[in-house]
Each structure stands twice: as structure tokens, then as C-alpha cells.
Image (cartoon, rainbow, N blue to C red; front, side):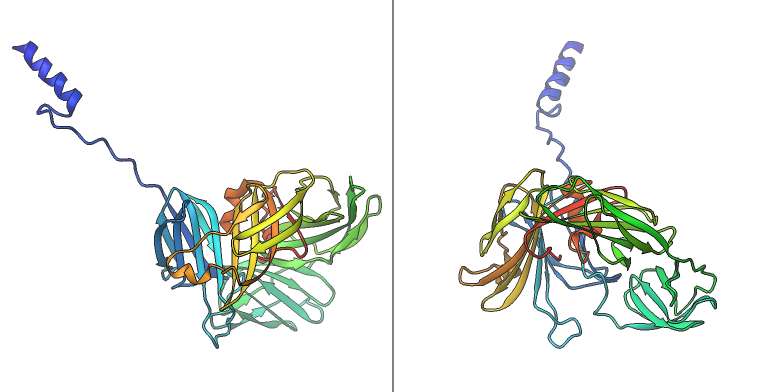
Length: 405
């Protein structure tokens, strides 16, 4: 009797259960969602159209951003498109802007929007500055600016985060930075002005095909510029002398622009801010140069010259036809062709026709962290190179004017 029971149990284990009915296999969990958040400054933008598509172009979801400016959909990999339109007569009125991330992947947290909020209602705050300030005082923050005389300077602010980094400089060029909570009244009176420091920029390994090397230093709060030095043109063996503010506890972004016979490149690096001499290797992190870029309703083609490996491509297509709009695309680099994704649903109005007039800009990019890192912030900075990670680099090769995203 025991033998027969054992056989029945064994058969049940093979076929499903003791009755012989099959047991469903456990289903694979759905992929993690891809989320996109649309913000201008720190102000969420609700009601913005978002399309989630599979890699073959089929529609996963068409939705709108919620009160937090966010929209999401579960997807393994595919395209995400944000369709921004602007009401006629509004302060932010401009032609529609359509942003597409090609090759978005499960778990992505994509951020899109203008660096500053120009749709909200500006507020005026009073900032108390040190009594030692000389002459006119300028204050810059990620969400506003102002100028005036000590002890109180008024600033116009909009879309501020909970804490704000303030960069303060007086008529002598002395300065400091300090982060405080956002409030109608801000007390910076205990800030300590420090004078500028003299330093130098120099270049090495400048190729014979390079016409010029220019360097600019920025003090950054994330991807927001608080301070910018003048651009300094340098050549091998001839350093440029420059005075920089003596700041502490903030990021420094160094952007080197290389103009060569075959095109131009921008290479940015980020590190803790320090007003110290910098030597730039003009042969490091270079990408292929771009030429012969052609913009069509189906996408972009171009020619590449030189060494280096691009990881992604960014393109801007200004379309004029029945109506005007701009398509922005970031995609993995795969040869010298970028196919413009076809948009379904509410996006069909923004698929260019063969008869439309199209102009554009194009860039090849590579950065520490690769394309996965680049696409997270690509459409939330005034310039892509602002997004170089701490102790890392971002390179952008482009034809003509630098792509502005």
C-alpha cells in the first residue's frame, strides 16, 4: 500500500498535483517602471502628455503627468516621449517641444524641464547681507537673482527648492556661497566675504589640427550655474592667468572647448571647487568629429572623422510645415544614422512630413557612467556638458553650434 501512495505522489509531482491537473508556472514579475518627471526649476509641470513605446514602436501607454509632474509605465526597454505645448498668450509661450529618449530602460528616473521656472508667479524675498559688503551686491541662486546695497537686497525668485544655494559678490569682487532654507526673509549677514585668487590655465598635447583651446570655469549647484569665469583661450606652453572667486563647499565644472579643422568638441569635468592652476590634456576624451550632417523627416545622417568612441547621439530638429515645432532626441550611438521615432496617438501631429523644412544640430557624446547616466538628465540642463558627474567627465562632439537641449 505504501508503494502505491509513493507512486501517486511522484506522478502528481511530475504532472502538476495529486489529481494530475497541471500547476501554472510562476509568472515573471513585470519590469520596473520607467518614470519621467517634468519640472521647470523646482516647480512640477502637471498635465504634460507622455508616450511610452516598446522598441518596435508599439504603444505601451499614453498618459499625462500628475500633480507632481510625474508619469510612469512598466517597460523593459523602449522609447519615452514628452510633448510640451505652451498656451498662447502665456509668459512661457513658444512653439511645441517634443523630447524623445530612445532606449529608455526599466528603472530609469528621467528628469526634463527648464532650468528655471518661468510659468509660476515670481516672489520677492528680502536677503540680509554682511554689513562689510562694498558697493553694489549681486546675489545669484538656482531659482532667482537680485542686486542692491547692504544691508538688505531684494531677490526675485520662482520655483525654489526647500534649500537654496546663494552666491553673493560685492563691488570689490569679494564673494561667498551659503545654503539656507527658502523663506520670505533670508539672513546671510554672517557670510564671510573672501577675495579672488589668481591662478592659471594651461594646455598640453595640443594636436597640429587644433586651431584653439578655450577654457571656462563654473561654480555649480547640481546642474545650475552660479558663477562663470570669462572664457580663456590657451595654447600649448602659454598659460592664461585668471582670477577666480575663493569658494568652499560647492562643485567646480571645468569646460574645455577644442576647435579643430574637422569640427569642435566640449569636454567637461566636475570636482570639488578649488581655485588652483589647471592643466588640460587636449588629447584626452576626444570623440570622432562630425561633418555633413543632413536633417530629414526620417532622421539624421552624418559623417565621422577621427578616433574615439561615442556612446550616444543628441539631435535637435526644428520643423516648419503646416505648423512649427522642435523635436529633441537622445539615443544610443549606433553608426552614422539616427532614425527619428514615429509617434503614435497624440504624437502623430509631430511626425515630420517629407515636404517640411527641417534644420537642426547634432552631437556625439560620451560620459562617465555611459548612456544610462546621460539620459537621466539630458533634457534638464541648458547644455548637456553641465551634467558631468563628480570626479568624472562628459565629452560632446558637434558640428556648427553646440546642441542646446
